[in-house]
Amino acid sequence: MELKREMLDALNSQLNAELYSAYLYLAMAAYFDSKGLKGFAHWMRVQAEEEVEHAMKFYDYINDRGGRVILRAIEKPPTEWDSITDAIRAGLEHERAVTEAISSLVDLARKLGDKPTEVFLHWFIEEQVEEEKSFAEILQALQLAGESPQALLLLDQRLAQRKD
Ligand SMILES: [Fe+2]
Ligand SMILES: [Fe+2]
Image (cartoon, rainbow, N blue to C red; front, top):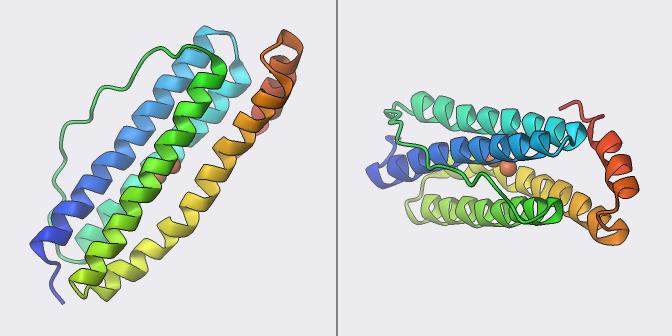
């Protein structure tokens, strides 16, 4: 079954969105590094790498279906946030927007009767639950403990442990 034009364009858009996610989290890593929060920065750097992997899943899938990957310009991410909590909240909001985008892709695949793409997207539907959860957990910890130096250092040490 040939990949329809509309589906191909939407998949290429999502490939770009995943690269933007990587860029956004790398910008957050740089912001945290500038604040001396090495653990937060490490966590965001790992997160950025994960987003590149997501982008590559779209890259491979488009190729597997005989489509043409078209790379577009990646939007410039913000460089500053009002606070540590604000940056993490922005991350959670971004993940929620990505969840909506993936959901729209599933709707489009269904509309076009494109079962392989629908199945391919299932992994992302599950992944987005994890993505929202991991940002929500950090946000909750910040909201509970506040941004006192002690609380931040403790959380920073925890986030430094992230492996993948
Ligand atoms: Fe992603
Ligand atoms: Fe993500």
